[in-house]
Structure formats: C-alpha cells, structure tokens
Length: 351
Image (cartoon, rainbow, N blue to C red; front, side, top):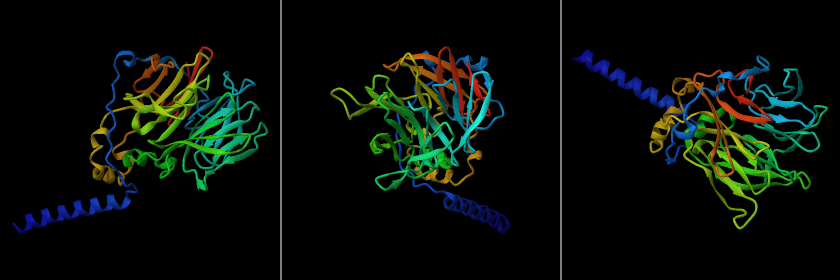
C-alpha cells in the first residue's frame, strides 16, 4: 500500500509541476469569449476541389508569400518571412526588389508606383522603384505599432491598414486567439499630411483590409471573431460600423477587391469549433498557451478562398482539402487569373 501511495503521490506531484510549468510559460491573460457559431461548409460554401488545377509559381523562391500587389508596369510583388520582397511576372521571371529588414505582409502599389507595405515589425513603409525603403509611420499618438498586417489604398490615395493586436506580435498569433481580447485597430495614413488616424479599435485580430471602389465603406477582417466588419465612409451611417459577414466557416485573412467590385477573402483554415468550445474556459486556454503549439494546433492544409459581392453573396467558392497551400491568406484576381497566397507554402498558386 505504501508503494501504491508513493506512486499516486509522485504522479500527482508531476501533474502539479507540469501545470505550474505551463502557467509559467503562458504569456496570456485570457477572457471569456462568445462568438457566433460558424455556418459550416454548406450551400454556396459546400466543399469542392476547385484549387486542384492551380499551377505553382515562384516555387522554392521563399516561404510564406502572404500578399500580392499588382504594379502599373506589369510587375507583381510579394513578400517573404525573411524580409525580402520579390517582384515577378506571370511567366515566372522574378528578381529581388527590396528587403525591409522586417516581415512584409499587406502591400499595394500607389499612384506613384511606390510599393506601400504593412510590415509587421517596422511599420508602414514606402518602397521606391530603386528599392529604397522609407518608414511612413511606426506609431500613432506616441504608441508604437505592434503588428501591422493588412493594407489597401483608396482611390483618393488614403492608405488604410491594420494593427492586428496591441499585445502580441506576428510570432505570437496563437496567443491572440487564446487570450480572446479585442485589441486590434483599423487606421489610415494621409499621404499629404502624413497623419495617422485610428478609425476603429477593440477589433478581434484586425487583419485584411479592402476599400470599396466607390469609397462608400472599408472592410476589415476580424480574424479571431470569424467575421468581417464594415466601416461606412459615406451616407447617413458615415463613421459607423456594422458586420458585413458573420458566422464565417473559416478564419478570414486578407481581403482584396477585383475589377468587378467583388471582395476576395482568403481563409487561413476551416473553422473547427474546438476553440469556440473553450470560449468560457479561460484557464484551459491559459494552460494551452504554455504548451508548444505543435502539440495541439497542427498545421492546416485546407485551401479556402471565397469571393463575395457587395451584398455579401458568394460569387466564387474555391476549396481544396489536403492542399499544398498551407494557411491560404488571400487571393488577387487579375483579369481571368486568380493568384493564391499562403503563409506555409513556398509557392504562389495561379488559377
């Protein structure tokens, strides 16, 4: 009996030590969350294998082409985890354009053919055709940006961008989900006055941004709340926000708008619902944050991109299970082609 008691006591001690170690490793202060359940992959979002025919472009050039910008001179631009920005053509011709020294994410070419970049580490950047990098802004109201992410440029030249979280950087994305706090922001930069303005705060992981071509509104992904918020710029609701899409079946990332006014959204993965079940269990989420992510959050391999019209109707539904595109971050349509980006893949997809 003494031996059994010793074994039980040792096991309990190990459990207590393990839990203590997990708490010490955890950097989050979680809160209770209640997000609307996802609609699932049904109806117009039913599963398909539309991405199966995608060709690979720039294979092996770098890992994590997160976004694509279309130049006025036939060049396309994309950024990689190591700070490089590569410009390329549809033929596969490519060359290094610049290196931000940070982590370039959202990007767009302005009317002066400068590449405007939301760099997760360095801030809002402008890169001339010579490759020279200029920091446009790295703070607002004296507070440094933590994690710049999405970006778009309005027809009037205003640069719209997001600061995903005020607490965690790009290498701590899982913590944003686990903590459950709404600390993201939607901002703008006026290229004439060089003023940064905060338009929306208390966003759940502010991510992709797209400006309506008529500048009636701006869309912003609230990634960890599985929805897309709309900020009205014109009309009686100017300055107010509402939900453009809610109860999404995936984790929304970048948003781009095409020549027909359709909004293309990349989903980093399909929404499983497992994390939703832990919404009212902040202590369990705090413990999870103390474990290596690989133990409980396997790398998703489900490619998922959807195009919506201005009313939120599904216009294109592109999916692929067990895909080579790991964490699809977005899609950019140019003419009859769609370029697919992802965080965990060493190539760009072309449909």
